[in-house]
Each structure stands twice: as structure tokens, then as C-alpha cells.
Length: 300
Image 1 (cartoon, rainbow, N blue to C red):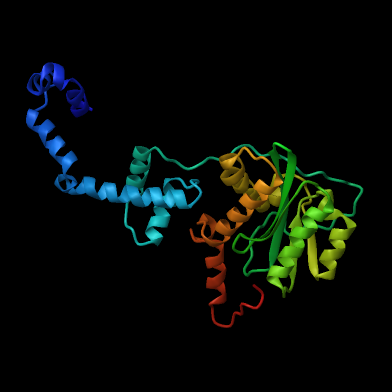
Image 2: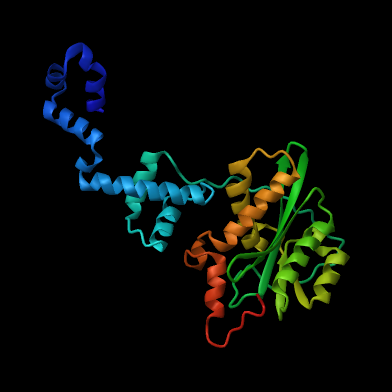
């Protein structure tokens, strides 16, 4: 800051008189000017910071500008770029970039107590020892200039992999059925799979429950009816709303939302680092499972 002050006022007062008043050596000012003309004269620490800033900016930009210092730091480590987390935090602050924070929860569930409800087979234990053991489903909504649109997700709990999704202008059963069909097409052969959802009427509809039965999928529905009954699916919804909807809006129409969701799901499954599975992407976590002796990739 002092060097900048000298630069602004030297024409009127001269360098040496200003330096005497602000108590810095004129040589410090001239040395700073020389470094500005020739970056090779900069101290090694500053040169390292400049190179690291370029890598930090690249990682942040290539991950939808949603990563905070912790995620940027972990991605750099994955790429073999060594840096302390505190250094990444400092340089991100210097660059004026930061991660995004989650907003408040919004509700889309419309319960219908008159419908038959399967028992809760999960009991808030959202864990799985293999892919296609437990899927969780949920719906969220997006406000656009042309009205509300709705997004349904179906997530494999083992790696948090999004196996099915759909965007629609309607909250009718077709929304969740289409997401289910996509998941069934992607995963083909499944055995002893549990499908868990909240008490939304779309998931309790006759068409949906019949399709689950036809695919030999066991249905499970939250018993209490609060957010913890389907916490993992709501967590993924929350990430979607934070990293896409609030971060990249406003939204004009359903086509914009659908394309952005497509981009995000591809990034989420294949490149986003998830802390619960060891700070690696879901696809990588699943492939590590199938690389174990005796495991087959036929069900992926």
C-alpha cells in the first residue's frame, strides 16, 4: 500500500521526501518497481503463490465456481499439486473468490394419508455396502420466469451416485416414474434393492408402486414424516439448489433448468469430490468397489 501511495504522489512531491514522511527506504520503492518490470526478480515465495493462484483459479472455474478452500485444496492434492490448506484459503481470499453456502430448506412433499404406505425399512440409516442396495428418491422445485418446474432425483446410497433424474412442469406421477425408468435402464440387473422415499403422493401412487413391484424393488417410506426420514436425498437436493439453482439463476424456462441439471449431474457423478466417500467422485468410488476380486460391473 505504501508503494502505491508513493507512485500516486511522486510527481508532486518526489520519491525521497514521501519515503521520509512514511518511513520507508527509497530503495524499497525502487526495488518494487524493478520487480514489477521483471517478475524473475520476485522472491521465490511470491512466484510460488502466483503459480498456485493460477491453479486455484482453474480448479474453481472448472467446478462451476462452487468449491470453497477445502474442496479446492483437496482437488489440487488429487492432481499432485502440493499446497497447505491455509495457503489455499489465503490465496482464494486474495483472488476474491469463495465457495457457495447453502440456503434454507424448501418443501415439496405433499403427503396423502389415505394412500397405502409401505413400512420404513431404512430407519434413517442411510448406508449401503454395495451399489444397487439402497436408492433414495426426492423432488425439489425451481422458480422460472415462465412458472415453477420440478426436478426429481434418484440416488444410489452406496456412492451417492445419481442414477436417475427428470425435470417437468408438473408434479404428477410421470415425473418420478420417468426418473425411475432412467435409473432402471442405467442399472439393468438389480437384486435385493430397496427404494426409499418420503410420504409424497407421487411415490405412493398405484402406478409407481406397481412399477417398483414389477422391477422386484422393495419399497420403503419414511415413518415419521420429517426431514430426517429422507435425509440423504434431501442433502443431494440441497446441493443441487445451492450449486446450480441459486448460484446460476435466474432461470427463464424449463429448457434452461433441464440443460443445467444435465451438466450438473454429469459433473456430480464423475468429478465432484464428496467428503462422505473419501473426497473422491461417486463414479470413482463405485469403480473401486467393482475392482475388488470377485465383483462384477454387470449391474452398473
